[in-house]
Image 1 (cartoon, rainbow, N blue to C red):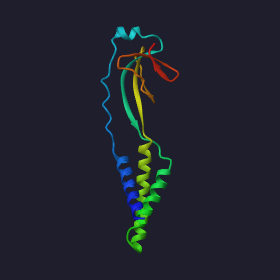
Image 2 (image 1 turned 90 degrees about the vertical axis):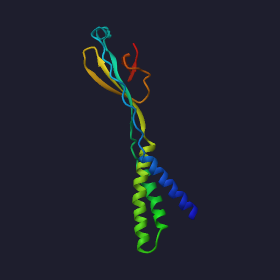
Image 3 (image 1 turned 60 degrees about the vertical axis):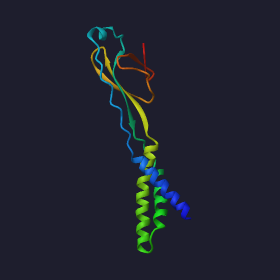
Image 4 (image 1 turned 120 degrees about the vertical axis):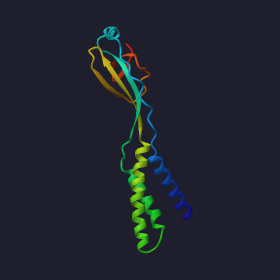
Length: 152
C-alpha cells in the first residue's frame, strides 16, 4: 500500500508541476506594410499578411481532473497523521489534489493557434485565428477561402 501511496504522490506532484510550468511565446514577427503600389495591385478580396505569430491557448477543464485529483489527494492525505490531524490532512489533500488535477487537465488540453494579421486593399486590418499552420510568411498575398488563407 505504501508503494501505491508513494507512486500516487509522485504522480500528483509531477502533474501539478507540469501544469504550472509556462512556456514562453516567441515574439511576433515584425509587421510588414505594403507600399501604395503593392496595395493597389491586391486583387479584390485579397489581403497582405502584415504579421504572423503563434499563441498557446489554455485547454478547458471538464471536471475529471478535479475529481481525480481530489480523490487521489484525499487518499494520500488520509495516510498522514491520526485523529483530527488525519481528517484535516484528508480534506487538505483533497483540496490540493483537486486544484492540481484541474490545472493538469487544462495543461494537457492546451493547443497552439496561429494568429495572422491581414491588411486589405482599402487599408482596413483584421486578425484571423487558425488551428493549423497556414504555411505563410509576412508579406504574402492571401485570400480567405473555406475558412483557410490561400495564396491567389
